[in-house]
Length: 307
Image (tube, rainbow, N blue to C red; front, top):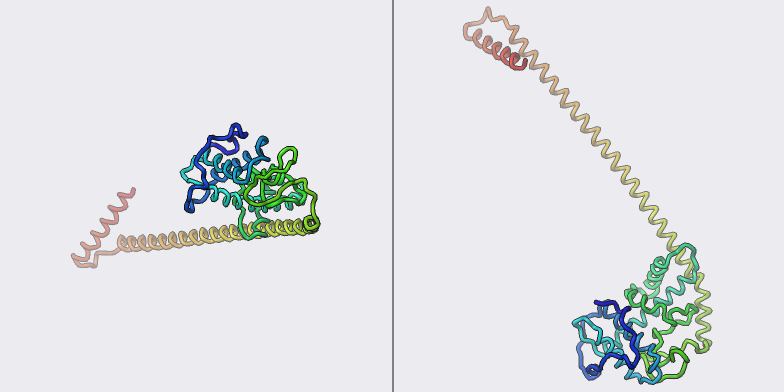
């Protein structure tokens, strides 16, 4: 599927052709949204929100209809999505990415040297899980939204709907429009901050140090656990080495015992052969004499074959 980042930007005059009005379609609960559908929905929302020609004139219903038309025009999946399903999904994306942006703000406020952007994202995900008790699974949406004005504002004024929509914000000159995102969020970024927001800002600054100390302690804990695991593995390797040496030594001793027993047997066999060869047969009966003479002949034959 083509990347939603590369989808064309449309003005009103360039908008995708008219399609069936989704509000008249009664749809059942569909399949879960895929990553590609999420990216397409964000692209549709952004393209419709920042339309410089009609962003202030379009009504809430018109705005939602255009988002649905854009999504339907470029949707390559087999899933049919209604306006209601897109609004529901956008509400979830907006809420989760906004909360994650808040976590990124707190992580970035630590100003740790030598930490990469990927490390910041990992730390923000850990903080998100710690605060909200669930993992953040919409990184693909956040990467598309993070440079929007409301996400780029790191002074503690992140709001619930992202990015700004024509209903609440005028793009460019800051005029008042009557169209909306469907989430009921007033999001003019230039609005003076209120007392409640100011208290929140002060609280965030006050807790920034606590967050930093928490992350520092957590990293130290992880380092300590890693060190202990490495020591444990080293001890296990040493134990295996000792066991191997003991096994080899035991095997060596067993082999030596076998060699000794073999030599003892060979010595006894040689003594027996010598006794037979030295046997005085002059006083034996004819049968006994023939018996020993046959044994002596076999002994000599065996020795000749070995030579």
